[in-house]
Every structure is written in structure tokens, then in C-alpha cells.
Length: 456
Ligand SMILES: *Cc1c(COP(=O)(O)O)cnc(C)c1O
Image (cartoon, rainbow, N blue to C red; front, side, top):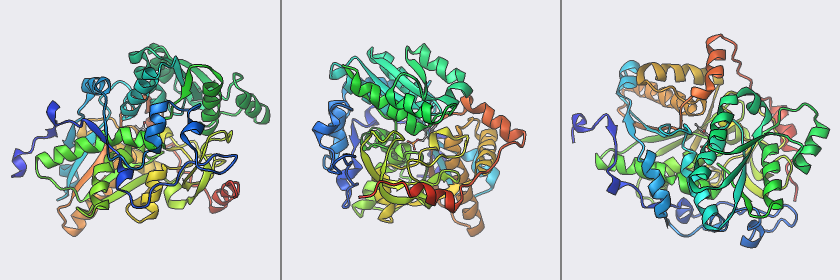
């Protein structure tokens, strides 16, 4: 098919959208390492996880064999409000770069939460409701996950209690108001409402909090309140499973026009959007049916893949969660106040960690000011104001397109544009005022944090 017949935006018809999530683990020879009980170091069983997570989500978390998992009608109905998301050919960016490469991006910012996180939030809220629960607790850093979960909970009539990292709570009052609009209660973390919060406040008075600390608080409230469970917006296998809608739609759209990508690029915080985007492509790679370059992009200030260690670690500061084997900088690693809040987690999805360790994907880290320069370049030609997290993928897509120009290669690049940056304008302001720095942790700093990994 000639290029002209390919529309600028590829949308799928309703009957072309996925009816099942794809569980990549089913095709992995080396399965991701199991979650371990922090006390016994034995794999977490269904019974161990049941007090913390919703039942059906525990099943999905532990299922390494079922390839396709049916998407319930209620969730598909909700998806229809904002999905399928468009796969856009970045003609204007290609023109600007004068590259022979073809660039496509899958845009997940077309919903009120402004990111891909709603794909999993609605699934998790659905299963909580189906189990007859009253509500859920969670943490949020930059606020995107809390916003997505608030929307999902209000849709199903569930209570939603969000522990928001205190610095974000103070810096992003508008995110907080969106959550409250959807009926969520938002508490700055660390708080006086939990034992772990009080302990952290005593030890570090005046702390701005961290994701790891907010997770500990949310888990404590979930397990000590009848009818409540804890839900998480990234890292876990179940979240990657739900996010596979991104990749399945992308693949269906490309297949519809006979387009075969050479490389697939995504930003990686806990790994959920990247894991979802690459899922069906990685599946083909694992089954030996096709080959792709798959690139994870992380901030140089929080480089879990590129400078971390593959080991069992705590998922939270309070050490109440199960241990996960992952590329990690250590749970005591305190990332510099980078403006891509969604990428400031010390660890990485255990599924992606295993794939990376097996050499099936690459990772690069990029500096914050370079990311914002790429974000601005993209916004000016493609019209979308990208989230700082998403702009990590933009930066590397541009770099690869420029390499194609140097080498005269007509490669096809697909990247994930995970969200919009309207709540991140303070970061853009810092960039424009020349007040943004590129803090990169020293080897000593990382080594110090890794010393505190659990030993067994
Ligand atoms: C949360 C977030 C990310 C990073 O999370 P992953 O789980 O790694 O996908 C990326 N982009 C946006 C817009 C986010 O909100």
C-alpha cells in the first residue's frame, strides 16, 4: 500500500479493538521472579496476597500461563469512552527533522486523567466492586495515578482514599482538586493517620515524603480497614496486563496498513506503559515470529535499568510490601526532585526486568534538560503539549530519527506518548527560565543505597 493511503491518524473500528488482554508472561521462557513474603522469603501465595489486593487481581498477578484474559463488558464499555486511542504519524516532526525515518506515536493523553493510567484504574476498580468491597486505597506521586483511580472509583461508586506525596500535594494543588471533583479523599503523605506515617514523621520531621512512604501508608490503611483493599498503578504484572490494550491497538492499527515497525520506544517508570505497548511485539519476538528493537527510556536521575542491580528488593520504604526481584536502585534511594514525577520510582516491573536481563530489550537514560528540549520541539510541530514522562520517549525517538538521517535509513519508529503536560507547567517554566538542572547520582550514592538491599 502506498504511503498516501495511510491516514494521518489511524483509528480502529469498534470491532477491531481488543476483547482480551494479552498476558506476555505466557510466552516468556524465563518467567518473572515471584513476589516473596518479606518475613519467610517464600513465594507469596494467593492467601498471602488476599488481605492486600482484590481477589481477581491476585489471580491475574500470579497467572504466568493464560495467554489471553477476557476484558469484561463493563470495562470495555468504559474503554469505549476514550478508546481506541489514535496512532498518529508524526509527519510534521519528520519534516522538521528532515529524516527518512517514519515516526508514529500512540497517544494516551485523550482522557481527563491525561495518561494511560486510566486503562488499569478502571479494571482494578471494576474487580474491587465485583468483589463487593467498599473502597480502595492507593498512593500517588505526581498525581496521574490518583486522578485516574478517582475517575474509575466514582464510575463504579467506590470509596477512594489517596495518599499523595507531600511535596506534590503542595506543588500540584490542581491535581488534588481534580481528584476531589471525582469524590476521592486526598491525604498528604507522610501523615499522622497511620503508624508508619507517624514513625517516618518522627524520624524525619518536615520531610516532603516519597512514593515508597506513601505506598506503606496506603497498604496499612487497606489491611486495617474492613472492606478495603490496596491498588497500585504500575510495576505489578496485573497492571502490565491491563496496559496491553495499548500495544494490541497499536499492533492492530499497524497491521491494518501493513506497517512493520523496526523499533518501539517508551518511557519507563515502573514499566506499565512500556510493558503494555511492547506486549504483542515482544510476544512475537519471544515466539521467534518477528524481531524488533525495543528501547526503554529512563531519567538519568533515577536510572534503575542502566545503573541498578537485578535483585530482590523492598517495594516501599516502610518494608511492609512483598519483596520483588527487579532492576533497582535500592528502596532507600531518594531520587533528585526530577520533574518527571511518574518516573521517580527506585525499581522496575519484574516482567520487564527479566526481559531486559535476558537481552530482549535495551535501555537508555536521558538528561532532564534534553528531555524538555525534545518536548518543546515536539509541541511546536505536533501540537500536543507532552507530559515530561512521555517526553523521555520523544527524546530518544528524535535521536533515532536523526541517526536514520545520518545513515540514510528509512526505519519505522513507534513510540508511546503516554500523556499530556498541562499540570507540569511549573517544570516547563523552570526549563524556559534556565533554572532546570540535570542532577545525576554518583556511583557512591547508588552503591550506598544498594548496600541496604535485603540480604538472604
Ligand atoms: C505514570 C506515568 C508514566 C510512568 O509510569 P509507567 O508505569 O512506567 O508507565 C509515564 N507517563 C505518564 C504520563 C505517567 O503518568
